[in-house]
Length: 621
Image 1 (spheres, rainbow, N blue to C red):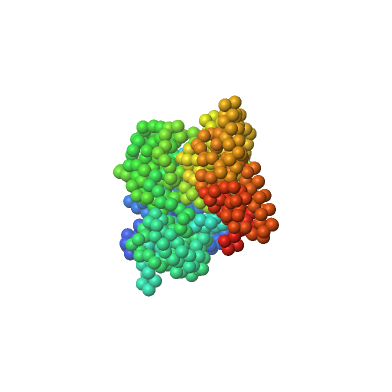
Image 2: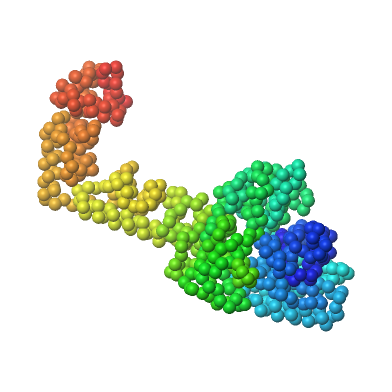
Protein backbone atom coordinates (compact mmCIF):
# COMPACT_ATOMS: atom_id res chain seq x y z
CA UNK A 1 0.00 0.00 0.00
CA UNK A 2 1.28 3.49 -0.84
CA UNK A 3 0.43 6.54 1.29
CA UNK A 4 1.09 9.98 -0.16
CA UNK A 5 1.22 13.35 1.51
CA UNK A 6 -0.34 16.54 0.15
CA UNK A 7 -0.53 20.09 1.39
CA UNK A 8 0.97 23.58 1.50
CA UNK A 9 4.65 24.30 2.05
CA UNK A 10 5.82 24.38 5.69
CA UNK A 11 2.67 22.71 7.03
CA UNK A 12 4.71 19.88 8.52
CA UNK A 13 4.41 17.02 6.01
CA UNK A 14 8.04 15.93 6.31
CA UNK A 15 8.07 16.31 10.13
CA UNK A 16 4.88 14.23 10.32
CA UNK A 17 6.48 11.42 8.28
CA UNK A 18 9.59 11.58 10.47
CA UNK A 19 7.44 11.30 13.59
CA UNK A 20 5.60 8.26 12.17
CA UNK A 21 8.56 6.42 10.64
CA UNK A 22 11.74 7.93 12.16
CA UNK A 23 12.92 8.55 8.58
CA UNK A 24 13.89 11.98 7.27
CA UNK A 25 12.63 12.10 3.67
CA UNK A 26 14.62 15.27 2.85
CA UNK A 27 17.79 13.67 1.49
CA UNK A 28 19.25 16.55 -0.57
CA UNK A 29 21.77 19.01 0.90
CA UNK A 30 19.74 21.93 -0.49
CA UNK A 31 16.58 20.61 1.19
CA UNK A 32 18.30 20.46 4.59
CA UNK A 33 19.81 23.91 4.18
CA UNK A 34 16.55 25.56 3.07
CA UNK A 35 14.35 23.37 5.33
CA UNK A 36 12.05 22.83 2.35
CA UNK A 37 11.24 19.68 0.37
CA UNK A 38 12.23 20.00 -3.28
CA UNK A 39 12.16 16.43 -4.51
CA UNK A 40 10.03 13.40 -3.67
CA UNK A 41 10.90 11.74 -0.38
CA UNK A 42 10.31 8.11 0.57
CA UNK A 43 9.74 6.28 3.84
CA UNK A 44 7.93 3.26 5.26
CA UNK A 45 6.61 1.80 8.47
CA UNK A 46 4.53 -1.13 9.75
CA UNK A 47 0.85 -0.87 10.63
CA UNK A 48 -0.65 -3.34 13.16
CA UNK A 49 -3.09 -5.03 10.71
CA UNK A 50 -2.21 -3.77 7.23
CA UNK A 51 1.50 -4.51 7.61
CA UNK A 52 4.26 -2.56 5.87
CA UNK A 53 3.23 0.51 3.88
CA UNK A 54 5.28 2.88 1.78
CA UNK A 55 5.05 6.65 2.09
CA UNK A 56 5.74 9.26 -0.58
CA UNK A 57 6.38 12.74 0.79
CA UNK A 58 5.76 15.46 -1.81
CA UNK A 59 7.08 19.04 -1.94
CA UNK A 60 4.49 21.67 -1.02
CA UNK A 61 5.88 24.71 -2.82
CA UNK A 62 4.06 25.68 -6.03
CA UNK A 63 7.43 25.91 -7.78
CA UNK A 64 7.83 22.16 -7.33
CA UNK A 65 4.30 21.07 -8.24
CA UNK A 66 5.76 19.11 -11.18
CA UNK A 67 7.73 16.98 -8.71
CA UNK A 68 4.63 16.55 -6.54
CA UNK A 69 2.64 15.27 -9.53
CA UNK A 70 5.38 12.74 -10.37
CA UNK A 71 4.88 11.08 -6.98
CA UNK A 72 1.12 10.75 -6.67
CA UNK A 73 0.38 8.50 -9.68
CA UNK A 74 0.42 5.29 -7.64
CA UNK A 75 -0.94 6.56 -4.33
CA UNK A 76 -3.71 4.60 -2.57
CA UNK A 77 -4.26 6.84 0.47
CA UNK A 78 -3.71 10.59 0.80
CA UNK A 79 -2.70 12.39 3.98
CA UNK A 80 -3.87 15.97 3.34
CA UNK A 81 -1.78 17.96 5.80
CA UNK A 82 -3.03 21.34 7.11
CA UNK A 83 -1.13 23.38 9.71
CA UNK A 84 -3.35 24.45 12.60
CA UNK A 85 -1.74 27.89 12.81
CA UNK A 86 -2.27 28.77 9.10
CA UNK A 87 -5.27 26.69 8.02
CA UNK A 88 -6.23 26.23 4.36
CA UNK A 89 -3.64 27.79 2.01
CA UNK A 90 -3.32 27.97 -1.83
CA UNK A 91 -1.34 24.74 -2.22
CA UNK A 92 -3.71 22.96 0.18
CA UNK A 93 -6.49 23.67 -2.29
CA UNK A 94 -4.44 22.77 -5.36
CA UNK A 95 -3.10 19.53 -3.91
CA UNK A 96 -6.61 18.58 -2.80
CA UNK A 97 -7.98 19.21 -6.30
CA UNK A 98 -5.21 17.08 -7.81
CA UNK A 99 -5.87 14.15 -5.48
CA UNK A 100 -9.58 14.42 -6.16
CA UNK A 101 -9.08 14.53 -9.93
CA UNK A 102 -6.77 11.50 -9.75
CA UNK A 103 -9.46 9.54 -7.91
CA UNK A 104 -7.24 8.60 -4.97
CA UNK A 105 -9.28 5.98 -3.16
CA UNK A 106 -9.05 7.21 0.44
CA UNK A 107 -8.15 10.46 2.19
CA UNK A 108 -7.34 11.39 5.77
CA UNK A 109 -6.95 15.05 6.74
CA UNK A 110 -4.21 15.68 9.30
CA UNK A 111 -4.15 18.96 11.22
CA UNK A 112 -0.54 19.44 12.37
CA UNK A 113 1.23 21.80 14.82
CA UNK A 114 -1.43 21.45 17.50
CA UNK A 115 1.17 22.41 20.05
CA UNK A 116 1.27 25.95 18.59
CA UNK A 117 -2.44 26.85 18.93
CA UNK A 118 -5.42 26.69 21.25
CA UNK A 119 -8.53 24.52 20.86
CA UNK A 120 -10.58 27.32 19.29
CA UNK A 121 -8.05 27.68 16.46
CA UNK A 122 -8.13 23.93 15.88
CA UNK A 123 -11.92 24.03 15.59
CA UNK A 124 -11.73 26.90 13.09
CA UNK A 125 -9.27 24.85 11.03
CA UNK A 126 -11.70 21.90 11.06
CA UNK A 127 -14.54 24.09 9.78
CA UNK A 128 -12.37 25.41 6.94
CA UNK A 129 -11.40 21.86 6.02
CA UNK A 130 -15.02 20.72 5.88
CA UNK A 131 -15.85 23.63 3.58
CA UNK A 132 -12.94 22.64 1.32
CA UNK A 133 -14.11 19.01 1.18
CA UNK A 134 -17.68 20.07 0.40
CA UNK A 135 -16.68 22.56 -2.30
CA UNK A 136 -15.10 19.89 -4.48
CA UNK A 137 -17.55 17.01 -4.10
CA UNK A 138 -18.51 17.82 -7.71
CA UNK A 139 -15.14 16.52 -8.88
CA UNK A 140 -16.13 12.88 -9.08
CA UNK A 141 -15.62 12.26 -12.76
CA UNK A 142 -15.75 8.53 -13.52
CA UNK A 143 -14.76 7.81 -9.95
CA UNK A 144 -14.99 4.22 -8.76
CA UNK A 145 -13.94 5.41 -5.32
CA UNK A 146 -16.27 5.42 -2.36
CA UNK A 147 -17.89 8.85 -2.24
CA UNK A 148 -17.44 10.32 1.20
CA UNK A 149 -19.20 13.43 2.50
CA UNK A 150 -17.18 16.07 4.37
CA UNK A 151 -18.65 14.72 7.60
CA UNK A 152 -17.08 11.26 7.33
CA UNK A 153 -13.63 12.03 5.95
CA UNK A 154 -11.41 11.41 9.00
CA UNK A 155 -9.80 14.55 10.44
CA UNK A 156 -7.02 13.83 12.92
CA UNK A 157 -5.31 16.52 14.99
CA UNK A 158 -1.62 15.85 15.83
CA UNK A 159 1.59 17.39 17.02
CA UNK A 160 4.72 15.90 15.46
CA UNK A 161 6.74 17.59 18.20
CA UNK A 162 4.85 16.21 21.24
CA UNK A 163 3.54 13.12 19.35
CA UNK A 164 0.00 13.90 20.52
CA UNK A 165 -2.61 12.29 18.23
CA UNK A 166 -0.15 10.08 16.34
CA UNK A 167 -1.62 6.88 17.79
CA UNK A 168 -5.07 7.96 16.53
CA UNK A 169 -3.61 8.66 13.07
CA UNK A 170 -1.91 5.24 12.99
CA UNK A 171 -5.23 3.58 13.89
CA UNK A 172 -7.06 5.48 11.11
CA UNK A 173 -4.36 4.57 8.58
CA UNK A 174 -4.49 0.92 9.63
CA UNK A 175 -8.27 0.78 9.12
CA UNK A 176 -8.13 2.51 5.75
CA UNK A 177 -5.22 0.42 4.40
CA UNK A 178 -6.79 -2.82 5.63
CA UNK A 179 -10.03 -1.95 3.81
CA UNK A 180 -8.07 -1.55 0.56
CA UNK A 181 -6.24 -4.87 0.92
CA UNK A 182 -8.59 -6.74 -1.46
CA UNK A 183 -7.95 -4.18 -4.23
CA UNK A 184 -4.23 -4.59 -3.73
CA UNK A 185 -4.48 -8.41 -3.93
CA UNK A 186 -6.30 -8.06 -7.25
CA UNK A 187 -3.58 -5.73 -8.52
CA UNK A 188 -0.90 -8.22 -7.46
CA UNK A 189 -2.63 -11.07 -9.31
CA UNK A 190 -2.75 -9.24 -12.63
CA UNK A 191 -0.33 -10.51 -15.27
CA UNK A 192 0.83 -7.02 -16.24
CA UNK A 193 3.54 -5.46 -14.11
CA UNK A 194 3.86 -1.68 -14.24
CA UNK A 195 6.58 0.22 -12.43
CA UNK A 196 6.25 4.03 -12.63
CA UNK A 197 9.82 5.35 -12.69
CA UNK A 198 10.39 8.46 -10.57
CA UNK A 199 14.16 8.32 -9.99
CA UNK A 200 17.18 7.06 -11.96
CA UNK A 201 20.80 7.05 -10.82
CA UNK A 202 24.02 5.09 -11.06
CA UNK A 203 25.64 3.25 -8.17
CA UNK A 204 29.32 2.43 -8.25
CA UNK A 205 29.87 -1.28 -8.66
CA UNK A 206 26.24 -1.95 -9.60
CA UNK A 207 25.34 0.33 -12.50
CA UNK A 208 21.85 1.60 -13.26
CA UNK A 209 19.32 1.88 -10.43
CA UNK A 210 15.69 2.90 -10.96
CA UNK A 211 13.12 3.51 -8.27
CA UNK A 212 9.37 3.83 -8.51
CA UNK A 213 5.98 2.58 -7.43
CA UNK A 214 4.90 -0.84 -8.67
CA UNK A 215 1.22 -0.11 -9.34
CA UNK A 216 0.28 -3.60 -10.60
CA UNK A 217 1.65 -7.11 -11.05
CA UNK A 218 4.99 -8.29 -9.74
CA UNK A 219 8.65 -8.21 -10.74
CA UNK A 220 11.14 -10.98 -9.91
CA UNK A 221 14.90 -11.12 -9.80
CA UNK A 222 16.22 -12.20 -13.20
CA UNK A 223 13.18 -10.94 -15.13
CA UNK A 224 13.69 -9.61 -18.63
CA UNK A 225 11.93 -6.25 -18.67
CA UNK A 226 11.02 -3.63 -21.24
CA UNK A 227 11.44 0.12 -20.82
CA UNK A 228 8.52 2.09 -22.28
CA UNK A 229 8.12 4.24 -24.34
CA UNK A 230 11.72 3.80 -25.57
CA UNK A 231 11.39 0.08 -26.28
CA UNK A 232 14.68 -0.93 -24.62
CA UNK A 233 15.31 -4.28 -22.94
CA UNK A 234 16.95 -4.71 -19.54
CA UNK A 235 17.39 -7.44 -16.95
CA UNK A 236 16.81 -7.31 -13.18
CA UNK A 237 20.03 -8.04 -11.31
CA UNK A 238 18.57 -7.43 -7.87
CA UNK A 239 15.53 -5.93 -6.15
CA UNK A 240 15.53 -3.75 -3.07
CA UNK A 241 12.48 -2.68 -1.07
CA UNK A 242 12.98 -0.29 1.87
CA UNK A 243 16.74 -1.07 1.83
CA UNK A 244 16.11 -4.83 2.03
CA UNK A 245 17.08 -7.27 -0.73
CA UNK A 246 14.12 -9.21 -2.12
CA UNK A 247 13.68 -11.82 -4.84
CA UNK A 248 10.26 -10.43 -5.73
CA UNK A 249 8.44 -7.08 -5.65
CA UNK A 250 4.64 -6.93 -5.42
CA UNK A 251 2.04 -4.37 -6.42
CA UNK A 252 1.78 -1.45 -4.00
CA UNK A 253 5.44 -1.45 -3.03
CA UNK A 254 8.13 1.18 -3.46
CA UNK A 255 10.79 -0.64 -5.47
CA UNK A 256 14.44 -0.12 -6.39
CA UNK A 257 15.71 -2.22 -9.32
CA UNK A 258 19.32 -2.76 -10.31
CA UNK A 259 19.12 -3.16 -14.11
CA UNK A 260 21.77 -4.62 -16.39
CA UNK A 261 22.10 -4.04 -20.12
CA UNK A 262 21.04 -0.38 -20.01
CA UNK A 263 22.70 2.95 -19.24
CA UNK A 264 21.01 5.36 -16.83
CA UNK A 265 20.90 8.01 -19.57
CA UNK A 266 18.40 5.83 -21.46
CA UNK A 267 15.78 6.00 -18.68
CA UNK A 268 13.91 9.05 -17.42
CA UNK A 269 11.37 9.91 -14.78
CA UNK A 270 7.96 9.17 -16.27
CA UNK A 271 9.00 5.98 -18.07
CA UNK A 272 7.18 2.71 -17.35
CA UNK A 273 8.88 -0.64 -16.79
CA UNK A 274 6.96 -3.80 -17.68
CA UNK A 275 7.20 -7.00 -19.72
CA UNK A 276 7.68 -6.85 -23.48
CA UNK A 277 4.50 -6.83 -25.59
CA UNK A 278 1.98 -5.88 -22.89
CA UNK A 279 2.12 -2.11 -23.23
CA UNK A 280 2.54 0.29 -26.12
CA UNK A 281 3.84 3.78 -26.69
CA UNK A 282 1.36 6.27 -28.12
CA UNK A 283 1.22 9.96 -29.01
CA UNK A 284 -2.58 10.12 -29.13
CA UNK A 285 -5.20 9.34 -26.52
CA UNK A 286 -8.95 9.83 -26.26
CA UNK A 287 -9.86 11.31 -22.89
CA UNK A 288 -12.73 12.50 -20.76
CA UNK A 289 -11.90 15.22 -18.27
CA UNK A 290 -13.45 17.63 -15.79
CA UNK A 291 -12.54 21.30 -16.26
CA UNK A 292 -12.14 23.05 -12.93
CA UNK A 293 -14.62 25.86 -12.17
CA UNK A 294 -11.68 28.26 -11.76
CA UNK A 295 -10.95 27.98 -15.52
CA UNK A 296 -12.87 30.68 -17.42
CA UNK A 297 -12.70 29.00 -20.82
CA UNK A 298 -10.66 26.21 -22.42
CA UNK A 299 -10.19 26.64 -26.15
CA UNK A 300 -9.64 23.93 -28.74
CA UNK A 301 -5.97 23.18 -29.51
CA UNK A 302 -4.79 24.64 -26.18
CA UNK A 303 -1.23 23.55 -25.39
CA UNK A 304 -1.14 21.67 -22.09
CA UNK A 305 1.05 19.77 -19.67
CA UNK A 306 -0.25 16.23 -19.24
CA UNK A 307 0.61 14.43 -15.99
CA UNK A 308 0.04 10.69 -15.79
CA UNK A 309 1.81 8.15 -13.62
CA UNK A 310 5.16 9.80 -12.93
CA UNK A 311 5.33 11.47 -16.37
CA UNK A 312 4.91 15.02 -17.61
CA UNK A 313 4.27 15.24 -21.37
CA UNK A 314 3.51 18.30 -23.48
CA UNK A 315 0.61 18.17 -25.91
CA UNK A 316 -2.52 19.81 -27.23
CA UNK A 317 -6.20 19.30 -26.42
CA UNK A 318 -8.42 18.62 -29.43
CA UNK A 319 -11.95 19.12 -28.11
CA UNK A 320 -14.57 16.82 -29.57
CA UNK A 321 -17.66 18.56 -30.91
CA UNK A 322 -16.79 22.00 -29.50
CA UNK A 323 -14.51 24.97 -30.16
CA UNK A 324 -14.27 25.77 -26.47
CA UNK A 325 -15.49 24.62 -23.06
CA UNK A 326 -16.25 26.55 -19.88
CA UNK A 327 -15.00 25.86 -16.37
CA UNK A 328 -17.04 23.28 -14.49
CA UNK A 329 -17.96 21.37 -17.66
CA UNK A 330 -17.10 17.84 -18.69
CA UNK A 331 -15.33 17.41 -22.02
CA UNK A 332 -14.44 14.64 -24.44
CA UNK A 333 -11.23 15.27 -26.36
CA UNK A 334 -8.23 13.76 -28.04
CA UNK A 335 -4.88 14.46 -26.50
CA UNK A 336 -2.19 15.00 -29.14
CA UNK A 337 1.17 14.45 -27.42
CA UNK A 338 4.51 15.88 -28.53
CA UNK A 339 6.38 12.83 -27.26
CA UNK A 340 5.10 9.28 -26.74
CA UNK A 341 3.71 8.09 -23.43
CA UNK A 342 2.65 4.72 -22.03
CA UNK A 343 -0.60 4.24 -20.13
CA UNK A 344 -3.76 2.13 -19.87
CA UNK A 345 -7.41 2.73 -20.60
CA UNK A 346 -8.86 3.87 -17.26
CA UNK A 347 -5.67 5.58 -16.04
CA UNK A 348 -6.25 8.99 -14.49
CA UNK A 349 -4.38 12.17 -15.29
CA UNK A 350 -4.09 15.87 -14.46
CA UNK A 351 -3.83 18.77 -16.93
CA UNK A 352 -2.11 22.13 -16.49
CA UNK A 353 -1.74 25.00 -18.92
CA UNK A 354 1.58 25.11 -20.72
CA UNK A 355 1.90 28.74 -19.62
CA UNK A 356 0.94 30.18 -17.19
CA UNK A 357 1.11 27.05 -15.04
CA UNK A 358 -2.57 26.93 -14.10
CA UNK A 359 -4.31 23.70 -13.08
CA UNK A 360 -6.99 23.02 -15.73
CA UNK A 361 -8.54 19.77 -14.57
CA UNK A 362 -8.18 16.04 -14.86
CA UNK A 363 -9.88 12.89 -15.99
CA UNK A 364 -9.54 9.43 -17.41
CA UNK A 365 -8.08 7.72 -20.49
CA UNK A 366 -10.76 6.19 -22.74
CA UNK A 367 -8.62 4.97 -25.64
CA UNK A 368 -4.85 4.70 -26.11
CA UNK A 369 -4.60 4.13 -29.87
CA UNK A 370 -7.48 5.99 -31.41
CA UNK A 371 -8.25 7.08 -34.91
CA UNK A 372 -9.26 10.68 -35.41
CA UNK A 373 -12.67 11.00 -33.79
CA UNK A 374 -15.77 12.94 -34.82
CA UNK A 375 -18.69 14.45 -32.95
CA UNK A 376 -20.72 11.33 -33.85
CA UNK A 377 -18.38 9.23 -31.69
CA UNK A 378 -19.49 10.96 -28.46
CA UNK A 379 -22.22 8.33 -27.70
CA UNK A 380 -19.55 5.60 -27.82
CA UNK A 381 -17.36 7.57 -25.43
CA UNK A 382 -20.36 8.16 -23.17
CA UNK A 383 -20.81 4.40 -23.05
CA UNK A 384 -17.18 3.91 -22.02
CA UNK A 385 -17.64 6.50 -19.27
CA UNK A 386 -20.69 4.68 -17.92
CA UNK A 387 -19.82 1.04 -18.63
CA UNK A 388 -16.03 1.10 -18.46
CA UNK A 389 -13.85 -1.61 -19.97
CA UNK A 390 -16.70 -3.54 -21.67
CA UNK A 391 -17.63 -0.52 -23.78
CA UNK A 392 -13.95 0.17 -24.55
CA UNK A 393 -13.55 -3.40 -25.85
CA UNK A 394 -16.69 -3.09 -27.99
CA UNK A 395 -15.49 0.18 -29.51
CA UNK A 396 -12.17 -1.43 -30.49
CA UNK A 397 -13.96 -4.40 -32.10
CA UNK A 398 -16.39 -2.34 -34.15
CA UNK A 399 -15.68 -2.94 -37.85
CA UNK A 400 -12.36 -4.44 -36.78
CA UNK A 401 -12.14 -8.13 -35.77
CA UNK A 402 -9.05 -8.60 -33.61
CA UNK A 403 -6.98 -11.21 -31.86
CA UNK A 404 -6.68 -11.32 -28.09
CA UNK A 405 -3.07 -10.13 -28.14
CA UNK A 406 -3.87 -7.05 -30.22
CA UNK A 407 -6.64 -6.05 -27.82
CA UNK A 408 -4.26 -6.32 -24.88
CA UNK A 409 -1.96 -3.62 -26.21
CA UNK A 410 -4.71 -1.60 -27.90
CA UNK A 411 -6.61 -1.10 -24.66
CA UNK A 412 -4.08 -1.84 -21.99
CA UNK A 413 -5.53 -4.69 -19.93
CA UNK A 414 -4.32 -7.73 -18.11
CA UNK A 415 -5.01 -10.98 -19.98
CA UNK A 416 -7.15 -12.14 -17.05
CA UNK A 417 -9.35 -9.03 -17.13
CA UNK A 418 -9.61 -9.07 -20.94
CA UNK A 419 -10.79 -12.70 -20.99
CA UNK A 420 -13.25 -12.05 -18.19
CA UNK A 421 -14.63 -9.05 -20.09
CA UNK A 422 -14.90 -10.94 -23.40
CA UNK A 423 -16.64 -13.91 -21.76
CA UNK A 424 -19.14 -11.55 -20.15
CA UNK A 425 -19.80 -9.83 -23.50
CA UNK A 426 -20.17 -13.23 -25.18
CA UNK A 427 -22.75 -14.34 -22.58
CA UNK A 428 -24.64 -11.10 -23.21
CA UNK A 429 -24.65 -11.81 -26.95
CA UNK A 430 -22.54 -8.74 -27.75
CA UNK A 431 -19.45 -10.41 -29.20
CA UNK A 432 -18.70 -13.53 -31.19
CA UNK A 433 -15.48 -15.54 -31.20
CA UNK A 434 -14.34 -17.24 -34.40
CA UNK A 435 -11.04 -19.07 -34.31
CA UNK A 436 -8.45 -16.74 -32.81
CA UNK A 437 -10.55 -13.66 -33.57
CA UNK A 438 -13.16 -11.67 -31.67
CA UNK A 439 -15.61 -9.12 -33.01
CA UNK A 440 -18.79 -7.42 -31.91
CA UNK A 441 -22.06 -8.99 -33.01
CA UNK A 442 -22.98 -6.01 -35.22
CA UNK A 443 -19.73 -6.23 -37.20
CA UNK A 444 -20.13 -10.00 -37.56
CA UNK A 445 -23.67 -9.47 -38.85
CA UNK A 446 -22.48 -6.89 -41.38
CA UNK A 447 -19.74 -9.20 -42.67
CA UNK A 448 -22.13 -12.15 -42.79
CA UNK A 449 -24.80 -10.25 -44.75
CA UNK A 450 -22.19 -8.97 -47.16
CA UNK A 451 -20.86 -12.49 -47.84
CA UNK A 452 -24.35 -13.94 -48.30
CA UNK A 453 -25.30 -11.07 -50.60
CA UNK A 454 -22.13 -11.58 -52.65
CA UNK A 455 -22.96 -15.28 -53.07
CA UNK A 456 -26.53 -14.46 -54.12
CA UNK A 457 -25.22 -12.06 -56.76
CA UNK A 458 -22.77 -14.72 -57.90
CA UNK A 459 -25.58 -17.25 -58.41
CA UNK A 460 -27.63 -14.72 -60.35
CA UNK A 461 -24.70 -14.19 -62.69
CA UNK A 462 -23.78 -17.89 -62.90
CA UNK A 463 -27.01 -19.84 -62.28
CA UNK A 464 -25.52 -23.22 -63.23
CA UNK A 465 -22.74 -23.08 -60.64
CA UNK A 466 -23.28 -24.60 -57.21
CA UNK A 467 -20.22 -23.15 -55.44
CA UNK A 468 -17.60 -20.41 -55.57
CA UNK A 469 -13.94 -21.01 -54.82
CA UNK A 470 -12.92 -19.70 -51.40
CA UNK A 471 -10.01 -17.77 -52.93
CA UNK A 472 -12.36 -16.11 -55.44
CA UNK A 473 -14.83 -15.11 -52.73
CA UNK A 474 -12.02 -13.85 -50.45
CA UNK A 475 -10.82 -11.41 -53.10
CA UNK A 476 -14.13 -9.57 -52.91
CA UNK A 477 -13.52 -8.50 -49.28
CA UNK A 478 -10.84 -6.18 -47.88
CA UNK A 479 -10.29 -8.13 -44.66
CA UNK A 480 -7.18 -10.21 -44.11
CA UNK A 481 -7.01 -13.77 -45.44
CA UNK A 482 -6.73 -15.25 -41.95
CA UNK A 483 -9.81 -13.40 -40.65
CA UNK A 484 -11.82 -14.41 -43.73
CA UNK A 485 -10.89 -18.09 -43.41
CA UNK A 486 -11.82 -18.07 -39.70
CA UNK A 487 -15.16 -16.33 -40.13
CA UNK A 488 -16.53 -18.38 -43.08
CA UNK A 489 -17.19 -21.58 -41.02
CA UNK A 490 -19.09 -19.47 -38.44
CA UNK A 491 -21.79 -18.53 -40.97
CA UNK A 492 -24.48 -21.18 -40.59
CA UNK A 493 -26.03 -20.56 -44.02
CA UNK A 494 -22.81 -21.58 -45.78
CA UNK A 495 -21.52 -25.00 -46.73
CA UNK A 496 -17.72 -25.23 -46.80
CA UNK A 497 -15.85 -28.13 -48.39
CA UNK A 498 -12.14 -27.38 -48.54
CA UNK A 499 -11.87 -24.69 -51.25
CA UNK A 500 -15.58 -24.77 -52.13
CA UNK A 501 -18.07 -22.35 -50.55
CA UNK A 502 -21.78 -22.52 -51.31
CA UNK A 503 -25.18 -21.62 -49.90
CA UNK A 504 -26.74 -24.64 -48.21
CA UNK A 505 -30.21 -23.91 -49.59
CA UNK A 506 -29.19 -23.06 -53.17
CA UNK A 507 -30.12 -25.37 -56.03
CA UNK A 508 -29.50 -24.34 -59.64
CA UNK A 509 -32.67 -23.66 -61.60
CA UNK A 510 -31.83 -24.27 -65.24
CA UNK A 511 -33.51 -22.60 -68.15
CA UNK A 512 -34.56 -24.82 -71.06
CA UNK A 513 -31.70 -23.57 -73.26
CA UNK A 514 -29.10 -24.09 -70.50
CA UNK A 515 -30.43 -27.57 -69.73
CA UNK A 516 -30.23 -28.57 -73.40
CA UNK A 517 -26.62 -27.34 -73.66
CA UNK A 518 -25.59 -29.19 -70.52
CA UNK A 519 -27.26 -32.43 -71.61
CA UNK A 520 -25.72 -32.25 -75.08
CA UNK A 521 -22.23 -31.70 -73.64
CA UNK A 522 -22.66 -34.61 -71.25
CA UNK A 523 -23.66 -36.92 -74.14
CA UNK A 524 -20.59 -35.82 -76.04
CA UNK A 525 -18.33 -36.88 -73.15
CA UNK A 526 -20.19 -40.20 -72.84
CA UNK A 527 -19.90 -41.04 -76.54
CA UNK A 528 -16.22 -40.05 -76.91
CA UNK A 529 -15.29 -42.27 -73.96
CA UNK A 530 -11.45 -42.26 -73.61
CA UNK A 531 -10.93 -39.70 -76.37
CA UNK A 532 -12.81 -36.85 -74.67
CA UNK A 533 -13.52 -33.43 -76.22
CA UNK A 534 -11.43 -30.37 -75.33
CA UNK A 535 -12.59 -28.41 -72.25
CA UNK A 536 -14.52 -25.20 -72.82
CA UNK A 537 -15.29 -22.06 -70.82
CA UNK A 538 -19.07 -22.38 -70.98
CA UNK A 539 -21.28 -22.39 -67.90
CA UNK A 540 -22.67 -25.75 -68.99
CA UNK A 541 -19.17 -27.27 -68.88
CA UNK A 542 -18.50 -25.75 -65.45
CA UNK A 543 -21.86 -27.05 -64.18
CA UNK A 544 -20.88 -30.60 -65.23
CA UNK A 545 -17.68 -30.28 -63.19
CA UNK A 546 -19.43 -28.88 -60.13
CA UNK A 547 -22.06 -31.62 -60.26
CA UNK A 548 -19.29 -34.23 -60.43
CA UNK A 549 -20.52 -35.51 -63.79
CA UNK A 550 -17.17 -35.01 -65.46
CA UNK A 551 -13.88 -35.55 -63.61
CA UNK A 552 -10.53 -33.85 -64.12
CA UNK A 553 -7.82 -36.49 -64.61
CA UNK A 554 -5.07 -34.18 -65.82
CA UNK A 555 -4.38 -30.69 -67.07
CA UNK A 556 -7.22 -29.82 -69.46
CA UNK A 557 -8.29 -33.48 -69.62
CA UNK A 558 -11.72 -34.57 -68.34
CA UNK A 559 -13.64 -37.85 -68.46
CA UNK A 560 -17.29 -38.59 -67.79
CA UNK A 561 -17.58 -40.27 -64.38
CA UNK A 562 -19.35 -43.30 -65.91
CA UNK A 563 -16.59 -43.64 -68.53
CA UNK A 564 -13.96 -43.45 -65.80
CA UNK A 565 -15.68 -46.18 -63.75
CA UNK A 566 -16.02 -48.34 -66.88
CA UNK A 567 -12.29 -47.89 -67.56
CA UNK A 568 -11.37 -48.85 -64.00
CA UNK A 569 -13.38 -52.09 -64.37
CA UNK A 570 -11.58 -53.00 -67.62
CA UNK A 571 -8.15 -52.26 -66.13
CA UNK A 572 -8.92 -54.28 -62.99
CA UNK A 573 -10.06 -57.26 -65.09
CA UNK A 574 -6.90 -57.09 -67.26
CA UNK A 575 -4.52 -56.96 -64.27
CA UNK A 576 -6.34 -59.73 -62.41
CA UNK A 577 -6.05 -62.03 -65.42
CA UNK A 578 -2.37 -61.27 -66.13
CA UNK A 579 -1.08 -60.24 -62.66
CA UNK A 580 0.13 -56.91 -64.06
CA UNK A 581 -0.16 -54.82 -67.23
CA UNK A 582 1.91 -52.43 -69.32
CA UNK A 583 0.75 -48.96 -70.42
CA UNK A 584 0.49 -50.28 -73.96
CA UNK A 585 -1.74 -53.19 -72.92
CA UNK A 586 -4.06 -50.89 -70.96
CA UNK A 587 -4.16 -48.41 -73.87
CA UNK A 588 -5.35 -51.16 -76.22
CA UNK A 589 -8.07 -52.26 -73.78
CA UNK A 590 -9.40 -48.72 -73.44
CA UNK A 591 -8.98 -47.88 -77.14
CA UNK A 592 -7.32 -44.51 -76.42
CA UNK A 593 -4.12 -42.67 -77.31
CA UNK A 594 -0.93 -41.92 -75.38
CA UNK A 595 -2.12 -38.27 -74.95
CA UNK A 596 -4.88 -39.44 -72.62
CA UNK A 597 -3.31 -42.67 -71.37
CA UNK A 598 -0.40 -41.16 -69.39
CA UNK A 599 -2.57 -38.60 -67.47
CA UNK A 600 -5.18 -41.31 -66.79
CA UNK A 601 -2.65 -43.72 -65.25
CA UNK A 602 -1.05 -40.94 -63.18
CA UNK A 603 -4.52 -40.07 -61.91
CA UNK A 604 -5.31 -43.70 -61.04
CA UNK A 605 -1.94 -44.02 -59.27
CA UNK A 606 -2.68 -40.82 -57.27
CA UNK A 607 -6.00 -42.17 -55.97
CA UNK A 608 -4.43 -45.55 -55.12
CA UNK A 609 -6.38 -47.57 -57.68
CA UNK A 610 -3.13 -48.70 -59.38
CA UNK A 611 0.56 -48.53 -58.53
CA UNK A 612 3.80 -48.92 -60.41
CA UNK A 613 5.77 -52.17 -60.48
CA UNK A 614 8.80 -51.36 -62.62
CA UNK A 615 7.46 -50.44 -66.07
CA UNK A 616 4.14 -52.15 -65.35
CA UNK A 617 1.04 -51.47 -63.24
CA UNK A 618 -0.57 -53.61 -60.55
CA UNK A 619 -3.72 -52.97 -58.55
CA UNK A 620 -3.27 -50.70 -55.55
CA UNK A 621 -4.35 -51.36 -52.00
